[in-house]
Length: 117
Image (cartoon, rainbow, N blue to C red; front, side, top):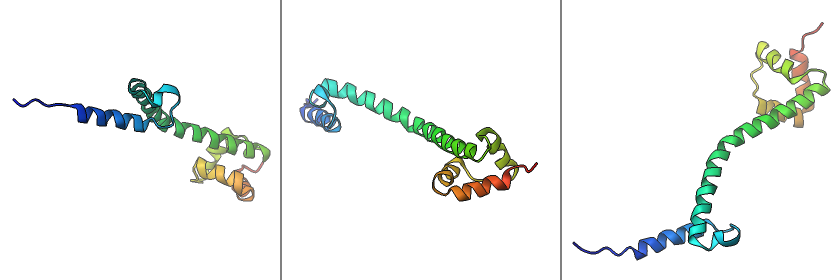
């Protein structure tokens, strides 16, 4: 059987790892063993945070809607069920944009769904 020397493949793999760690701090950008560990951790956080990002943005939108709604005299927890009950199918991202960028449109939506007593 022919002997396979793996020097080329191994150095190519190490070089790729070091290229991927460009911008990392200390020895983690230059030493293969540290770079490998740093990459494994970075990829783990990257995977986790792609999911957390959705959570974080939703929380931000809810806060923005809540603050504008309170300024107009209704709490967030009362507003959302009223929107559903009145068939307003705007998601939180759009409501947040309206609250921040187009307050008159947001106010019109709230006036439409607010119960008049």
